[in-house]
Length: 416
Ligand code: NAD
Image 1 (cartoon, rainbow, N blue to C red):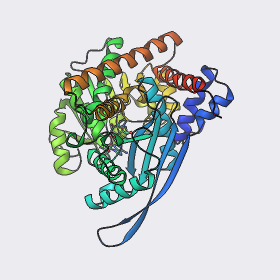
Image 2: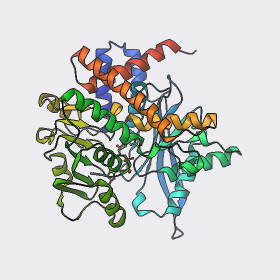
Image 3: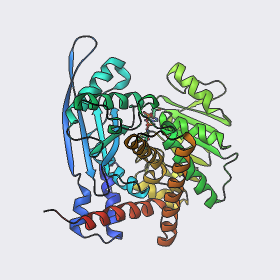
Image 4: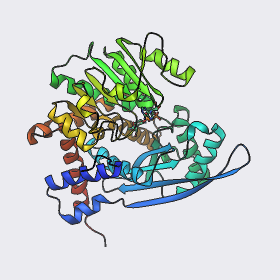
């Protein structure tokens, strides 16, 4: 297969492997290959300079057999409809793997948030929400943050939804600020899940986390928090990067200080005592644990052979191509796949939704205890299946996720 794969071709290839192994009939395979519903919208926004600009956005709902659609919203200049479709499909498997009662969806707006003011982003978000309003809702489809969207974006979505309905509906979006119904622990939840999986995988590898050398690609919500939690667990953070490039220091550094440096300067580059490196070099860094936490298709046929980590935990969605998967497997590098490794985010989003629906607010300890139980169980389910099937954890996670979703579809039956 040609290496230039898209996120959608990768997702479909993964589904095909699972469908074949689960012996799904062609009718079921066809249901799972396609989103249930997709909406493309044109979002017209008045920019600060008085000009009017129209952005393209979409919301893709893949499958809701196990519960309401759920998924993040991504703002990125390269976002495409196919990419959002692939990410919606991954969300369906992820919710099934971690066993929460949601289906999978994703949204995207093609824009460059780094070049937009806060006011422009607010107007874009509110207009986008109004255009997808009939598609979403607490029992229909619940948005959450993703790349270049955050708690503030979710507050605008919730407020727009509530204003249009005429009363406050905090359960209409998750990942909100705590002041408007957000959950304790949501900001760090994806990274906490990433590190729970890393900890469990390290146990099986006989690797001690204390002193383990960690490299993290991407220094946003997932990457920066994963680096901080890994550091708190005793790991040595030797390399991190963002879209501008990366830094390396053999003796390790304090990721909290790097976060402050990035907040002041806009990137992790040029931190004292560290060497600037490229994103390619970061992936090939000599380390024990590699956490890709940026975008898709980062570990490919081109660089998989040069990866030196013993364990790769996928914080990002789809960072490894199937070709690279095969190479890592041959090199006996253990990989904890995205649909398991980063499931902590949607799990705490689910906890936020439950808290909003019941008008409760749980403590951080309660949220994290529940999260740890859920993700540890999901890890053990996937790990046991991979041992039973004598296959890697990606295949095992897909067998578990796709298997649970197809079972739900069969049980519901076909209407009419
Ligand atoms: P974010 O916008 O907070 O951060 C993205 C980071 O990636 C930024 O530091 C950016 O500089 C960096 N980046 C962008 N392009 C890069 C490149 N080419 N090379 C290296 N770094 C690059 O986004 P996030 O929420 O942290 O999401 C990161 C990944 O995790 C995405 O794949 C997302 O789908 C996935 N994810 C996020 C969550 C969540 O709760 N936020 C949950 C599950 C999965």
